[in-house]
Length: 310
Ligand SMILES: *[C@@H]1O[C@H](CO)[C@@H](O)[C@H](O)[C@H]1NC(C)=O
Ligand SMILES: *[C@@H]1O[C@H](CO)[C@@H](O)[C@H](O)[C@H]1NC(C)=O
Ligand SMILES: *[C@@H]1O[C@H](CO)[C@@H](O)[C@H](O)[C@H]1NC(C)=O
Ligand SMILES: *[C@@H]1O[C@H](CO)[C@@H](O)[C@H](O)[C@H]1NC(C)=O
Ligand SMILES: *[C@@H]1O[C@H](CO)[C@@H](O)[C@H](O)[C@H]1NC(C)=O
Ligand SMILES: *[C@@H]1O[C@H](CO)[C@@H](O)[C@H](O)[C@H]1NC(C)=O
Ligand SMILES: CC(=O)N[C@H]1CO[C@H](CO)[C@@H](O)[C@@H]1O
Image (cartoon, rainbow, N blue to C red; front, side):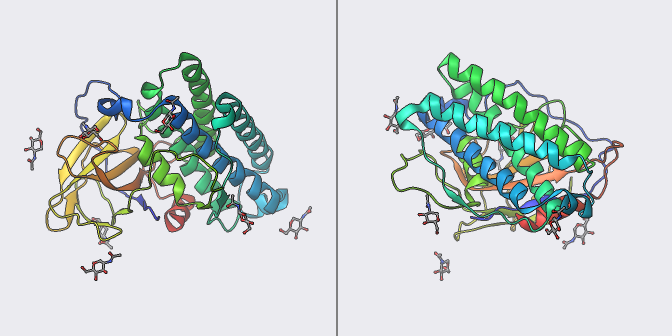
């Protein structure tokens, strides 16, 4: 399962936002997932992130970090993040008891501390989007309180990695972008190589990949999907903050909406106006319109690396 991480450069002057009413991205099918499945998906992503951080920290020492152009203090903070991930795994495992999934084997494509930091930014953004999308589906209030607390910490990690470490924008916009559970799982699943056969089913499957080549605001871009999924006549749903914009695929292309900014995602759906786990047929393309720490849209070398990795 391969997804695409696309960097686009475009002027945002004059960008307009569609009006919206805040609502869950997949609220129409909230009964599709029970709390056990939702917590197990959260645990699956937490186990993945825990392995990601501890693996990189065991591979790279402080000198490796500074040689890669990262701040000297970055490694120590990444150690704190790794310990937070272990704590999240422990808490979710305790909540789930006998129903908890066990950790899988993983393969991450980073090759040095800088590419690790670039991938860390994408993974922490996906974590924020996964919890934001799952929140309205959780019925048990105690679980919801735990999830909210983890979400807040995940967002602090994401902001620190994107800002001080990678010298980009620490937030995406006024609203973070929720993801459907299947979309969040699809983004994580590409790094999972095998799982214990005793694990209960998560109730989600990874979608075939979706690629939007050279996504540029307001410009036509080519759309392709994996597993022979035909894109023609289907719709690309662009998730940006709480706004979803649907664009019909015509001649293998979509015009990327002008309101897309920060961290956005795109999926292919077979229904105009609906993008839920029962209508999505390919995805997820991660689309970043990065800003520098000075607030101006800019090329970000580390994000280019993440593009190559995903
Ligand atoms: C949640 O859904 C799964 C899969 O359908 C099922 O096996 C499990 O029993 C359900 N758990 C509860 C508490 O309903
Ligand atoms: C850090 O690791 C590099 C190899 O990645 C090694 O050459 C170097 O000696 C190590 N530095 C310290 C202080 O351990
Ligand atoms: C992980 O990989 C190891 C080595 O290939 C293998 O022995 C083990 O069974 C795998 N574990 C899982 C959970 O797939
Ligand atoms: C990518 O988009 C830019 C701006 O529209 C264009 O100049 C460039 O040729 C495109 N590159 C590819 C490979 O399509
Ligand atoms: C994809 O479609 C082509 C042409 O229809 C076919 O030859 C090929 O076997 C298909 N591949 C898969 C994986 O279904
Ligand atoms: C998709 O739905 C929107 C909003 O209902 C509508 O304006 C648009 O014409 C539809 N597009 C197609 C191709 O049917
Ligand atoms: C709006 C929407 O996506 N509804 C779907 C909810 O799930 C059922 C069963 O999977 C689908 O048939 C609906 O289309």
